[in-house]
Amino acid sequence: MTDQKVEVLEKITCHSGFFTLNRYKLKHTLFAGGWSEDLLREVLERGHAVAVLPYDPVTDNVVLIEQFRPGAMVAEHNPPWLFEIVAGIIEPNEQPEQVAHREMQEEAGCEILDLKPIYHFFVSPGAVSETTQLYCAKVDASNISGLHGVEAEAEDIKVHVMPYQQAMQMLNDGQIMYAPAIMALQWLTLNRDQLRQDWSN
Image 1 (tube, one colour):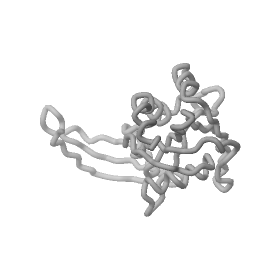
Image 2: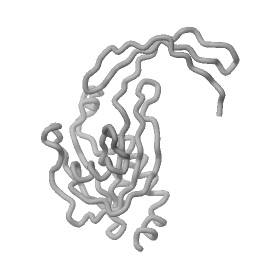
Image 3: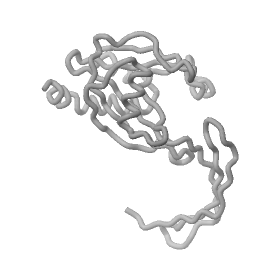
């Protein structure tokens, strides 16, 4: 831990829409002592998120979703449809666990039988204030399929149920590029045997 300090000298809202972009004028203490020069830093702010990896410990199946992402389009990823895990933004007065249950219904049409916290992490703290609470959810994948999403939010989501080994092969082949999905699948690899034992009861 470090005993560093930050002083915000000015905050200007550059854009307020689906996202908010704020420009900060600030300075902070330096590791070598003293203070930095005045810095200008723009930060994208949209609140915080929850992401959930649905996993069926009985069949050893993983549930992934697929949807169009404009960021992938701008980055010229072809095609700009990504394999992801269920995720959503925490609304005011919502708890992360509530978001997990809501988004699982909206994006995958399935019920959470048990929920295990994995990690809480920053997405890209150099420019974004968002953090993500990551979970693994116990599900019954036998009836999970089809197309989902909230029509009012123009969501168009396809659900994929696959064996764990197939999901890991996709990960190793570079077909999964969504960071929370990568982290969740790697965590599952490390904890899968214990998880199946715990959830078999």
